[in-house]
Image 1 (cartoon, rainbow, N blue to C red):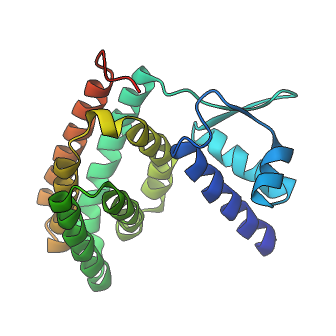
Image 2 (image 1 turned 30 degrees about the vertical axis):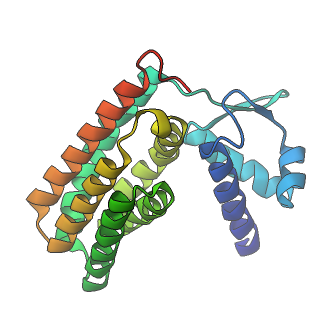
Length: 218
């Protein structure tokens, strides 16, 4: 069982990254057998990983037809932001209150890295630290239910960002907002961390609406 779960996690991580980074494009129809051969992983872990991705909205499982990578839907993306705003505000506030000394040190490290990404306009460094911040926030909030809920929408958020950021994003500003959030959590100030989270999601919502503007479609 442990081996199968490990393979399922491996399949999930690889498939999620392929979908988020558009290696598997919206509208593509996939087959379990072909995915298994491509990743060198058996069909059962592939099937379980796809079921998880379906619950997160990144694929649709079509009986006897295959697996469809979902399209990027503007209206649904804005609904997702409503949920993300509430969850991330809660998690930022509780992480500031509950995080350990080791976790606060990591938040400071990420804040510094995000500031460097902003100065250098380094999108690769930004995305790496963004992934670290998401994982640390989920852990430091010490709320398994919130962590589970936010995990269900992070893939959709990352895919949307990857699809549009070169056309619509102010990457240095976004990195600075992430840095401010990480620093406020490290400071242990729950109210300030919640406000920093709101400012970040305000930017994400503005970015989302700008991405739908005529002439910016990828």
